[in-house]
Length: 124
Image (tube, rainbow, N blue to C red; front, side):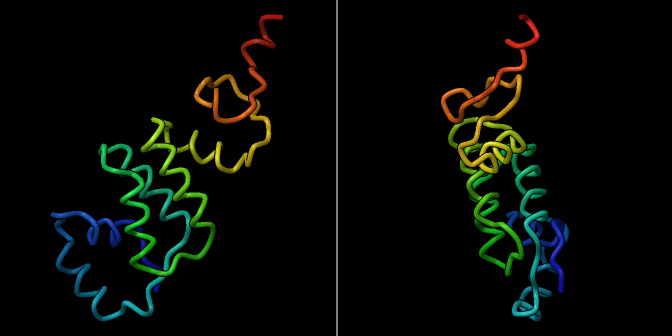
């Protein structure tokens, strides 16, 4: 069974209106539950928006069910959000770039990856 974001949030949050139902499903179907990296990305966004510990939310969710897809990228991105103040998508782009030069006007990457600054090019 595919575990969607609201299910995992109900398990992770201290208080959630779906908490009891989610815990019952988890107890009864734990070995059948799985999700995708996209659920983790959505959890990253929700945690960021709600000012929760993004790394904790993503790693907790990943430990609850089998995740199909690239878990390491999402966890690494959550670390950049938590430790360095990146937005979730900037963090995902940084991790996915894997050290390659990033073409962007966004200064968030300074000191983390080589960047071809679009602003500088438009001023020439």
